[in-house]
Length: 200
Image (cartoon, rainbow, N blue to C red; front, side):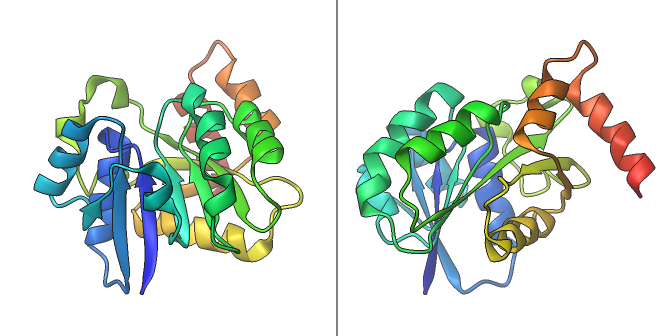
């Protein structure tokens, strides 16, 4: 049985777990968070099948790893787990900026794994707390996917299917395009929503 590991069990991570639990599945969901209370909360709300306090142990058997942690913790996480990743493992993130994460992936991850940057666009997400995690959090939302030019098509397809399975609409940008929009005066959700409407 395959394994998806979610690192970071706050609002985004727990909601991803809850959404995945709604699917007919042949995988287990492993959770990890530095905050033991967050791991206990995720177990209690049934967002994960099990947790592990040790980051490497939580990741070493994973076929997919989703990082739902603050952006400043991503490089050190990549560095910590890089030597214990399964060949072919797909890693995704949910950070609000993509160029720094893409650079960290290039610097720290081995070429035997895949990385696809992502950013679920939740217009009112800042008002929600971890306790508000829901399997429907991403329903109808845009989810920016920012694969690098060297990303393997199979990895892109898996990331796209994951996003769609959570009810979100994938929207493809380069990391540079994403961060350019994020730095603009107009909010990223508004810009991407307009772009998505024109693309449909």
